[in-house]
Structure formats: C-alpha cells, structure tokens
Amino acid sequence: MTRAIVVMGVSGCGKSTVGALLAAALPSAVFLDADDLHPAANRARMTAGIPLTDQDREPWLRACAAAVAAERSAGRPVVLACSALRRSYRDLLVAGAGPLFFVHLRAAPALIAGRLHARQGHFMPAGLLASQLETLEDLELGEYGMVADVAGTPGQIVRQVLSAAA
Image (tube, rainbow, N blue to C red; front, side):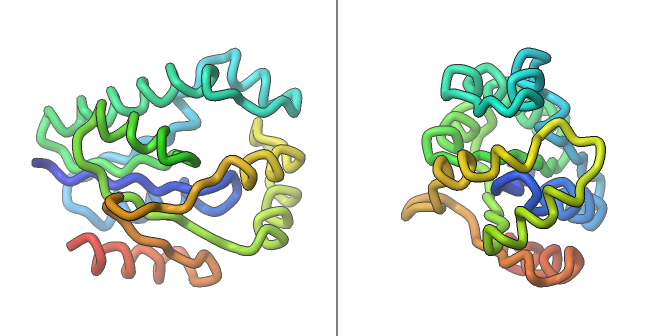
C-alpha cells in the first residue's frame, strides 16, 4: 500500500511546515493541508473563537480521509497535516484512508501560544488553544506512529520521521 503519513497536533505546533517538508523529502509525495478542507461553517466558528464539536469535525475528517485515499489510489505517497486530536478522529481517518503513520508534534503550551500570537492571517485564534489541549489525546497502544518534540528544527523532525517511518 502507498505510504501515508499524518502530521498531527494542536494548532501552531508546525503541522503544515513539517508536513510540507516531509512531502518534499518523499519521492512523488503529495502534501495535503486539512485546513484547506474545512467547510466554511467550521472556519467561521473558529474565526469567531468557537471550538468545533465532534459533529462539526466528522464531515471534515471524512473529507480528509477521502483526499488521502484518492492520492493512495493514484499510487502517490501522501502527507496530511491534520490536528487529529482524539483517538476517535484518528480511527475515522484510518477507516476511510487505510493504514496511516501518525507523527504527533508536541511542545510546551507556552511555546505554542507564542507561535499562535505571532501568526498572521490564519483563521484559528490563539484563544482556542486551551480547548485543543483539552481535546488532545496522545497516541495510544495500537496506533502506528511517533511523537516528535517541536523544539527541534523542522528539518530535524523530518529526518526523525523518515527514520522512524522507514
């Protein structure tokens, strides 16, 4: 089966940056950013500082899984940047896309908060970090993946991932 990696974690942890670099390091890989697949209603809720519910997230996660599955069906490796905060969300992604290697980007909440406050032009406000941290569930036994500390550079994280996912 064609390789598929999900770079996961709370907003501001570097999913898009690491995911794009990771895809560039894999021959013929496609990078998908789950933020691009949010319906307008989800974006509006987040922009207004309203946390998403499981019901809000389900169609979005199904769209993410379908996008990964389409790339796999075309024979292309794929890297998806997606929060995938709960085990049930990750299970939904796996059910729709097949086996996935999860890379959980982790950092101290203060580091993430600083990044979010400095970020310009993103619909996700820093005020939603607390709700994301409350929702976040670490990878569990039986989930295929690894944890990477974002204190390292994006390039260092990519090298760790390539070594672990080989």
